[in-house]
Length: 553
Image (tube, rainbow, N blue to C red; front, side, top):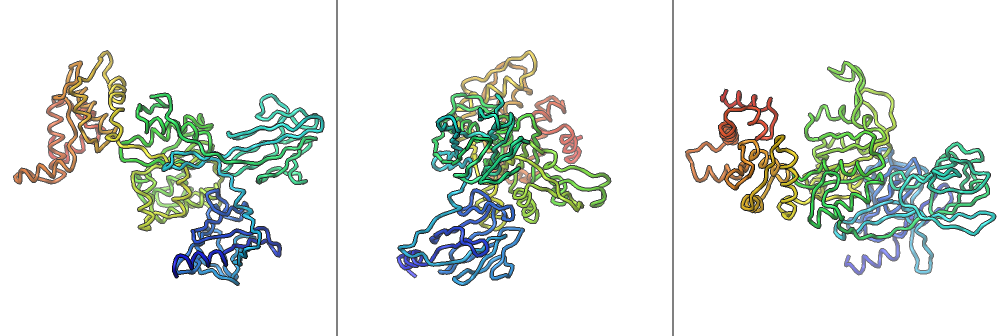
């Protein structure tokens, strides 16, 4: 079928009809793009029911047919049969929770409403290619019996409402409690919670304790009516004015834009995905986000998913009960429970075993964890920050990382530049490292020639490598000035390969190269093993292990 015929077919046929029972709720016209359906705000169609997963279904075109894929652990049915993947055509009925989805024609004279798609309440979404931040604001109109309507706009949550002076929205109504209710954002959606008021919180004529809000809802508190709606605006990210930001250092435009981005997204609970080469400062970035968030002061937990044995990672994440496996002599909390009400940083998320990824997705969708060996679930409230040095787009394509989990995490991407791409930051980074790590009483500086030598280096290890180079220079001499001759770059595997090509008599194994580096550094440090370990950037116990392994002791 040609592109023109396909376009005509879309205009004539493709319309999703969403029903509950026998009542049609809304219609959603579709084209030949992939359509996401679920409770999460990243979807094209948002069904705000607890029985719907955040990423429940996707509809896509393949060879002129519509294919439906289920991503929910809660299941989906077509014509009363559970499926993982299936075709979808007129006459079929999909069921997700209590929702029924049918396919119908869109006629030129038929009015089609987007319904739930207009209820998208994503608080923040960042588009790195455009450098814009899409921010959702909650606009509130307060109507009282005595006065004119007043308009307010809110971006940061929670919004506390009542007569007390500490509230975000202060109302003068004798029938409203001092602490009446709270509007909060949860995973990009707005919820209202009654705070134990005397006269109740009313939404659409119902007295509620807690409920999901939709745009254009009307809230009644005492004799006051509150109308809500939300709007999105695209904001261009501008470079931050500061060169030092929560321990991060940078004068370059790219780093100061990252500082501004962190400052804007940190107050929300939206998931943040940090990518960058090894040594670019991903954990430091995660801590900066935490420091600028409303969760500062609560736990900050960090776990490297690639540094833990695959058979222990589930226990590290979710905890375990006593006797759950051999060696589990006591019950133990995992990092999700330890980070409750705080922030959890999952470093090297790309290393997470494929078989464990559905369990992580389930936690992110439901906010509940199950310890290994437990028969009950525990609710957790955690802000998730993830990081990787891998290209997860490629990993998803190779089916080594789940697509639904990727898009659940990849909401606000922060891409850290390599050190060679931010050369203007080198002088500031060098100054900070020397000031922080110089022995007490010593003031160490760098000559212009030495700085130029640093600028000409490629820095495959990025800031971590720069720190190690400077530490070696500090501890291998008592001079107050670092000259080019004192800069000792850590050899790379590529350099060993080149040397091996030039000298066939030299052993060209990684072990031989490592032994050579240890011996050379040990000699430079006058046999001082502690100084050698510090210079190499390794623990003293690791150095002793290597000395024994290479028969140097």
